[in-house]
Length: 227
Figure 1 (spheres, rainbow, N blue to C red):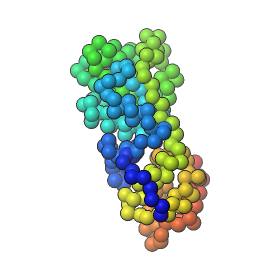
Figure 2 (figure 1 turned 90 degrees about the vertical axis):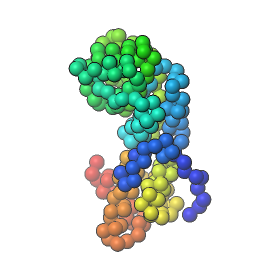
Figure 3 (figure 1 turned 60 degrees about the vertical axis):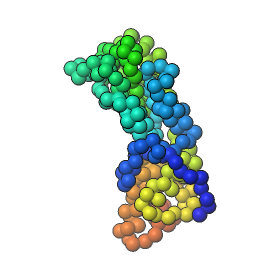
Figure 4 (figure 1 turned 180 degrees about the vertical axis):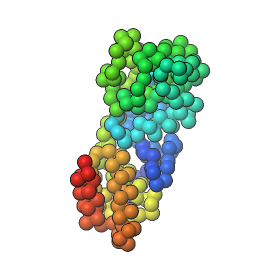
C-alpha cells in the first residue's frame, strides 16, 4: 500500500468501535466549516447555529462533540417539556429538527431564551431551516437570523480515508486499488461506508476468505438491489 497522511480526525460514529470524540474527526472539505464552527464556540457569530447536511454526513458526531465541549443539554421544543426553561440555564441542542416534531411557539421561546440569557442553541437537520414546516412568522424571522453551516456530501478523498479507517479498526488490510474500486461504485455517504465494511467483514468471516474484488462486487450488488 502507498503511504497515506496521518488520519487524525473522522466524522463518523463507528458501530464496530464507537468513536465520538474530537480526535476521531477527519477534517475534509465538506466538513471544514462545520468543524470550525464547533471549535470556535463560544465565539459564535450568532447564538443559534444549524448544521445542515445529508444523512451520514457527521452532524450527530459534531453535535456530540459540541455537547461535550459546551455542556449542552438535548431538548425537544414541545409544550410541557420546558425546553425554553432549559435554554435559560445553559447551552442546548436540538437534533434532527427537520424530522422530529416540534411546536413553533416552543422553538420560538427557546431561541428567545438563548438570545436573552447569553446561552447557545445548536440544531442539526438534513434541510436548511427555510424548508422546515414552520407556520409562525416570528419563528421564521428568528430562523433567518441563525447561522447555517452546510455539510456537503463526502468527496472521494474522505470516503477513501473513512474506508481505510473502518477496515483498520477491524484489523483488516485492504489494497488501495480495492478501496478506490469501492469508492467509485458506492453510495456517497458515510453511513454507506460503514454498512459496506460491516457486510464485507461478516461475509469474509463466514466464508473464511480474504476481502477481494469479487466479494466487494457481491456486497455492492446486494446493497443496490435492496434499494
